[in-house]
Length: 245
Image (cartoon, rainbow, N blue to C red):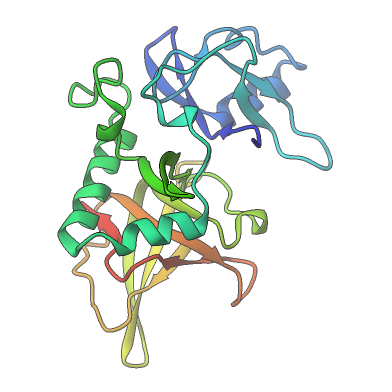
């Protein structure tokens, strides 16, 4: 199984979620000294497994991964292998429109309220209630797999092209007419706190009602497509596998 990497982490010192960028910044500014974070970084979901930092090199981005001697809680989605694109699409095909929206709503509640969330209690949950865990068939048997997640505030590299994720984050949105169709443009906050264009979703003939001055929480079940240039577009697994609020 490929080692899972984390975009963010639960920091036991202040009980909040922090980003990988913060660790890399401290590494660069303090000549490699990240003792402030070391040993205090935990899985952002179960808050149990200890994470370690691997620095950026000329050929590889920085990343966080679970320490081999540490373990996730049983009902943490990171314990399972990641679901393949085929497995996720097959799973979504069994769901109606309301079920897809409910799944995205639960995922959004979980991913955007991880600091002090009271409605997501990973310690008491059974695995079937974790919105990122799905069941897939394997030679007649039902197995548990996890839908990978990807924060929209992080990089969307070509190495992820074609892989299905739940993309999530705090964004600003804009509707762009395209012939008789519409695109939903997505903007995320940069390190300097300004908003920059990140990606877009083709919405066919559906025109989203957006307030461009407001910030939204968004969850998208889809995959990256680089067919139109270096900036990717997110293709939806199903036409309604997108939720914002």
